[in-house]
Image 1 (cartoon, rainbow, N blue to C red):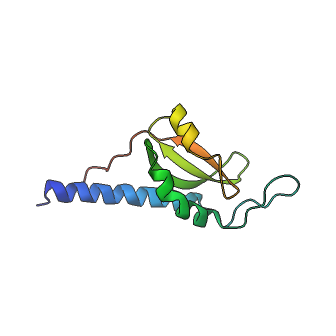
Image 2 (image 1 turned 135 degrees about the horizontal axis):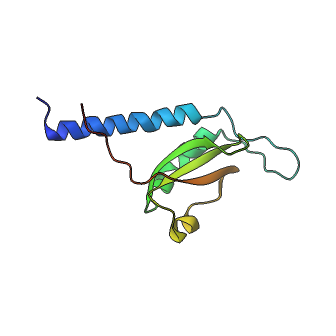
Length: 115
């Protein structure tokens, strides 16, 4: 029989797997390489996200960080938040090392119950 604590850990593990799957599905090999006035990025977007994840996760209301895409298929860093607020908009940068950053209102993320 699985204890309540073990059940919660299993649920948390499934939640982590779901977030990792989101990361893998939306990951891109490299950042945008644009001509003209647009900024050219040097480091891979996944490296940039990984180096800033602790900083972003320390912002109250942030519940996750992932790599996603803008409407034009440009890779971006998604910051998952419980709800959008003026404070979050001030604290979350618009770009990280040349990569665009976008807020994604996911609501609270909770572990799934074990089966």
